[in-house]
Image 1 (cartoon, helix red, strand yellow):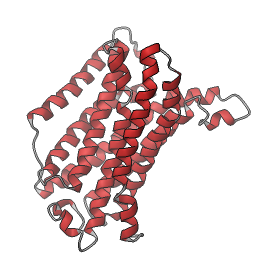
Image 2 (cartoon, rainbow, N blue to C red):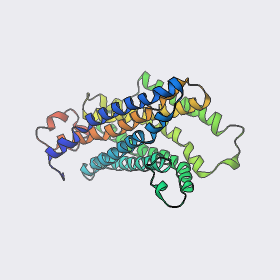
Image 3 (tube, rainbow, N blue to C red):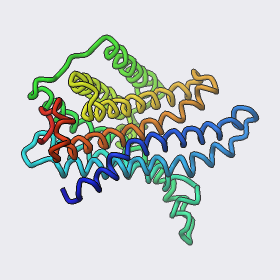
Image 4 (cartoon, one colour):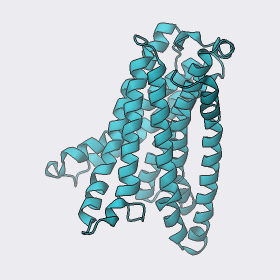
Amino acid sequence: MSFRFYHAEFYIFKLPRVIVLTTGLILLLGLAGAVPLLQTGDARFIHIFFAYPGAVFLIACSIVQSWISFECWRNFSRGDLLRPAWFLVTISATLQLIGGIVNQILASTSHLNPLLWLPSPASGAIEIAREYGPLFNPLYMFFLMLGLFYVLKACRQSGILSSFRAVDFFLSAAVCAYTINFFATVVFAPHHSISLFNPHRILSWTSDPLLCILLLQAIMIRRSTANMGWGLIARCWFYFTAGIFATSVGDISLWAWSRGYLPEVLQVASWYVWFIAAAAYALGPSYQLQAMLYAKTPDGIARVASQPAILPL
C-alpha cells in the first residue's frame, strides 16, 4: 500500500456514504427542477439542472469509479486472476469518464464547455462531440464485459459459481426482448437502407446486445457472491448489477419515450435513472477496495474471512 491504513479508512470507508448522500441530494434537486415542467411546462430549471449540477455529478461519479477501479487493480498481486479483471474494469471506467466529458460537457452549450471559450465559432467541434460521444458507450461496455468474464472464471475456480433464479430469467428476458424488438423495428426497419449504414452507427447499435451480456454476467456474479453473505464483495457486485440494470432501464425508457409509450410523469422520472446508474458504478469498486484494505490488516481479516476464495489475503 502506498498510503497508510488510517488514511485509506478516512477516504475509502466514508466514500459509499458520501456517494449515497450526494445521489439523494442530486435526485431531490432534479425532482424539484421537474416540478415547474410538469405543472406549467417551464423547462428552464430542468435544463439548468442537467447542464450544470447533473453533468458535474455524472462526471464526478466516473472520476471516482476510475480512480477506485485503478486502486483495486494496483492492489491485486501479480498472477491473481482478478488482477486482469480489474485492469479491464479500469479501462472501462476510464472510457466512461471520457465519454461523460464528451457527452456532458463538450457536446453541450453550457458555460462548462471550454469549446465555447475559443475565439472562433466552435459549433463544428460541438457537433462532432454530439455525433461521436455516444460511441464511448459500447466501448466501455465491451471492456467491462471482458472484465466480468475473468470474474466469472474466478467464481468458477473458487467453486462458488451459482445458477439463475426465476426472477433473474425474467429480468434478462425483458432486456433481451427489448433488444430484439429494437433491432427488428429500428435497425432492420424497411425504411433503412444499407447505404445509410456507417461504421459509427453500427458500433452504436452494439450497446443493447452488450447490455444483455453484461446483465447476464452481473446477475450470475451477484448470485455467486451473495451465497457468501452480505459482505463487502457481495455489495461490490450488487452495485455493479444495479448499475448495469439501471443502464438497461434508461435505454428502454429512451426507446419507449421515442415511441410515445410513456406518460409525461414516467418520461420525466426516467431521466433520473442515469444518476442511479452512475452512483452504482462508483459504489461497486469502493466496496471491493474496502475489502482489500481490511484484508491487509490483522483485525480486518476477520471481516472478510467468509470470503477468502476471491480475495488476495
